[in-house]
Structures are given as C-alpha cells and as structure tokens.
Length: 373
Image 1 (cartoon, rainbow, N blue to C red):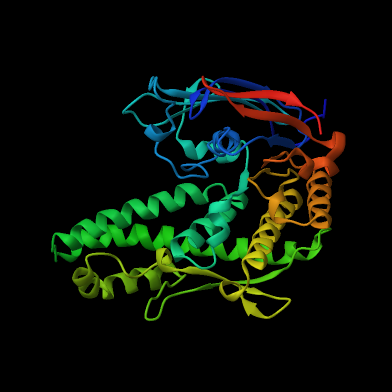
Image 2: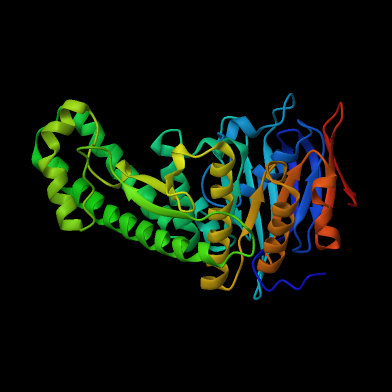
C-alpha cells in the first residue's frame, strides 16, 4: 500500500449512479487506469470522483440526471478521503426531485466544504473546444484552477453571483430607488475584488509552473481580457462606483454589464506566438494538458499535496513518447490520477505504477473488475 502522504481517495462506492448499480473500488493512491468499450461506464466513474469537489462535476449535470434508470430510486456516492492526519467519510446523495446532499463524517455541510478535503482537476473531451467557444467555459476553467489554490474562492464566487442575481431582478423589475441597489452593489464590489485578486494570483502561479515540466508539452502565455466596452475594476471602491454609474445601461439590458463575470481567459501558444484559438486542434489539446499539469505541479509545490487528476480519453490524443512523458510526470508528482481509454495498450508504460480496472457494459449494469496491463 502507498502511504497516504497526501490527500487521496482510498475507497469509492457508487450506488444507482448513472450506469452503475453497485460498485466498490479500493484504492491505494496509485494512478487508476479504467479501460473498456465506449459507453461501458468509465467516464461515469470519473464524474463520481469529480463530485467530491464543489460544483456540478465534470459534466455539470443536475442531481436528477445522475439517477440510474429505470429504477430511479436515488443515487449515492460514498468515499474515504485520507490525509496524513485523518480519514474522512464523504457521502453524497440525492433522492428523485431533491437537491444533492453533502455529508462529511456524518455531518451535513455545504458542498463548498469539499474543497478543503481533496482538490480535483480534470480534462475531458468536451473541453477540447475550450479556446474556440464562448467565454463562459474559459471563466469556469479559470475559476476551477483558482479554487484549487484558494478553496474559499468557491464561496466568494457563489456570494457574488447571488448578489448579482438579486441586482438583476431589480433591474428587470425597473426599480430605480438607489437604496435598493446600494447594499447589493457593496457586496458585489467586495466579493468581486476578491475574485479578481484570486484569479490574478492563480494565473501567476500557473504561468510559473508551466516551466518545470518533464514532458514535452507546450507553454501558454495566459492573460485576462474583457469584451469591448466592458469594465471590471479590481479595487472594491472603483467597482462599487462603476456599478452605480452603470445602472441606467444595465437596466436597459436587463442584466449587470460591469464586473468580473464579464472577463475572459486568453492564451498565446508561446512556441509559435499564436493565440490558442487559432492553433490546430492537436496544439490546443496539448496546451490544455500542459495547463492541467502545471496546475497540479503548482498545487504540489504550494500545499505539499498533489491533486486528484481526472483525464478522460487523454492518451488517445498523444503519441507514444508523449504518453510515456505524461505517465512519468503523473508518477513524479505522486498524483492520484484516474485515466480512461478504450485500449489497455495505451497505458502499458505505467506498468505496476498504476492500478488497472476493466469496465464492461452488461445487460444489467456496468461491471468493474481488476485487471492488468
């Protein structure tokens, strides 16, 4: 057994979750390879692990969508998270028509509490278009990276969004009384300034961490931008003043046009000095892998603990040399990574360094069995 010198998941149990009826996997901290045919249920396991961090997981699914059909009796994820000091029991569950509930050691807590137990980063095929689609996905990517360094960022972002929703409601209702806006704009200014600072700090750390890779992945010059005409002052007093000044324009639009919710994440492919959005699909994928690895290295350096990595179908996009370099980097980090693929031969360079499971689709449910490379 690998001694848990970092935060790792030592046990994972799924009940009526997606395609899985009942699954229990014992883990020892090594990377986990999950191989099997498309549709067998591999990504469902990654999704379950992603829900051990705040948010709606790697598919951003509603709790109702996670229920196994046709039983529709509710789902549950039970995990043990081990640290140097303690083993935590984490239980997530949702009954039909009910929101997700989070319990840690039997105590019901907000899901933001998960960020202090285990930090989870992921890369999935749906993210391959990150650089060419809308800004919302890139903000979400940036905020997840930021939250990995500053767990409170999740709560701050939620608080900012709640105040903004309340302000937007006033705007849509045509309320003009300044007193109704003042308190909400003060909250938005305070939380918004913290959001901006946290993001800036995260970008600096990511930028530095890209330089220390053992794998031949490209680096990206990262920056935060705003659409033409938009502003997002990073000083709380300036942001409060900008919100007040923007009320007439915001009322015409029916939404808040000022603040950190308008920013975008940009990247320049350094090797070619080309914006990521103009790079080839392969270059964009390599840049994403580079950023995930940089995030993991930075967390290892700043917290002493590598995050859990979820890499869905990532090996299929890499040549043999880069696959080996990726596995060497994961192992050097001491990261507990979950990797999926249809062909076990994609993972042979891991050797005994990884735990291996075959995931198969049966008529009744997905089946998970130990295997070898």
